[in-house]
Image (cartoon, rainbow, N blue to C red):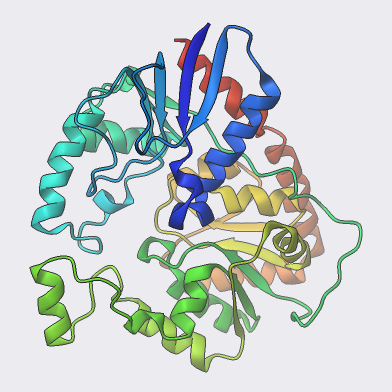
Length: 360
């Protein structure tokens, strides 16, 4: 029997509330249900563990600018790389001298892996281009929405608006929240945002300096300049504080988030770039019509079940929001198509495809 270890590190710290933590938890759960008499998969916190006793180890976290991989793998290794957004937008995520040195090390380390898993064809192309990995070594395994996300028979509206646009996720530069805020203003419809960081920004978190890591951080602090990664937060915070039609809810647990999706008039994903599009699938599973920007990942995931718009065109986005809000035929078509698309995704399928990579 082959012994495989999958890293549980993402189930603690900040990753716990992000996609990496969710994926790790769901994948481990799916493996337990699936079972395989020829393979024993163990959930292990890799930090401080003896990994040499396993036939294969699966690292779940790769950051190009931090030492998330060892210099030498203790045995055969699979590494999951969700996306390379930091490398796509270097002006917004500057690595600094230390980060560049770490990137050189990380690139060398990941090239030694037996296989790379990623979550979309877009990410696969980026991995090949930026990390110099051979195409045959990179395997695309899609994520899936949790089973909790579904159409509810009845929902309690609480204090939310009668009609609203929903956005779920982070507020990093690539998420393009500014365009969505402008579009909702033009469409004259409230915007509800679910996410921990959005509430922090609304409450003044964009001015907090938690850690000074290098010379450039000190220089920015002394000169009053924001870090490029946080530069867009000040404008966003202004919108959050002065626009009564924007509601920032903070972190919303799944049992409440499913209600939020069901109540939303339309879900909008305004991103410039994504490694995947999990919120899109969650919305579809809940019977919520979806508008997404026309980027490769969204088209790959949503297929014909979403209305696609230019991420830089707030007016076009506003027009499509109004169309969905006011046209029942369009709404019904999107909902039906969404149900058909989301049927193609499941954590059982994700686990089976991951297991196939292990066996290979």
